Amino acid sequence: MAFSLFISVVFLLPVFASAEEEGSSIDSVPAKFRFTYDNASLPAGEKMGFLGTTALYDVNDWLSFGPSAYGALVGQRGGFITLGMATELRKELFDNNFEVNAGMFVGAGGGRGGFQLAGGGLMLRYHLGAKLKTFMGDFGGGISYIDFPDGAIHSSQPYISYEFPFTTLIASGRRDVPDWEGAMIGRGSLSEQEFATVFRTYQIPTGVLTDSGRAQYKTINLMGIEWNRYLDDNLFLKIESEGAMGGQSNGYMQILFGLGYRFELMDGTWFKLSSSLGVAGGGDVATGGGLIIDAVASLQQRLGDNLFAEISAGYVKVPETSFKAVSYAGKIGYHFYTPNVRSESVDLTDLIGFDAAHFRMRTTHQTYYKAAANWRSHHANLNVDLLGIQMDYFLHDNFYLTGQGLAAYKGQAGAYMTGLVGGGVHLPLFGSPLFIDGELLVGAAGGGGLAVGGGFVWQGNAGLGYQFSDEFSLIAQYGYMAAPKGNFRAKVLSLSLGYNLTLFSR
Image (cartoon, rainbow, N blue to C red):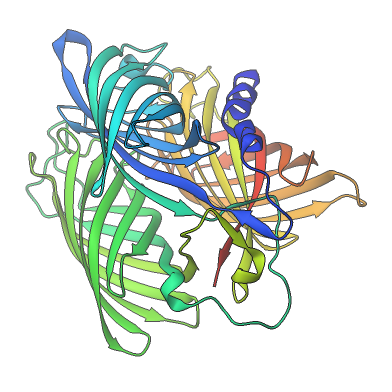
């Protein structure tokens, strides 16, 4: 737990260093979406091409932090994926056209090599690099060091990077838009986005083999999330992440990045085409080095101003193995606009017509304690420690939707990951800083030898929290987690450092 608190402080306290927000305005936040590529050395001379994706948000002129993920793309380790947080120091030179930087990633994960390769799953990555800013984005490179402290990976190598810079509007704590009549901000200053929960099925033809050479089971059921950002009225970028929750491939996970285009068929009805590529593997699915490609056609129907339903069909293929599948999906999502910020500070009166959406981000440590004799296929007497991120969206002061992604870093369960969604209740106690939170979640989990059956799991938590300020809180919870179709049963102890923030949408 002490390690969790240390990491939480390292990555969340820098928020306090950001510029002060005036009562009538909010400072915009410069940010960047970064891709990196490391060619890491593994034991016995093996190489693994490691693709990294990071969203970095500037705290001030010299410090950035944000969530990050890494996944095997080239080699023999498809499905080797880690999740975590990154922070970076930087110095701009030559009229801000050139930058030198140094940073650190702390995360957890593994796969395709299990605890022998990743140990407990804890991953550290350090880098020293530079980048050149251009009108097409920022291009860079440098030297990195990837370390799994209790595993077998300890590798130094050069890396290359590409960044797409952008600006967003995030307010610390809970902020509200002034409640008075006024003209809404213009359409030209809006950024259109979509967020959806995805339920997907892969129908796999005969002849597809697993990593171990057996016939691949005919279906994989997955659950995950998808985010789309529109570049104009029709063209959009997409990011999606899903994990197996049914079939015989628990531990399978994929993270995809793509581009799409939509056609309006009638008012509120859209036909969409998209193609993506990314990293995938785990669950004995034969994904080779990890690269996967898919193409999808979708039909979207708006259910109101914001809600929509979507169905899709597509085809997915791993270029270097026999794995292929027809893909069917159903999605329930939320369509919204956010301010397309172009200035350093935005007056609250310029946000008339937007809703203030209150969120809480939690950096979380969880420990699984054995609640069934055969809950793991190996090291059954060891607890499993996990690190991850939880995000809560408050529908009301007392009710919130929640999602979490966590990965094992200790307990010889490297490669175990879980992604869950659900709802919760938030109850302040007698006007004091104390509060009670209770939540119920469902989703996918797998890897690391935990006996989760097809991958579907549920988790219930309840606990006590303390609100230190409008921004920060500390939450301790006790819960229970189980796999209905597997032997996995665990008592769960959680400790989280929460950060309240406000986003603006309509």
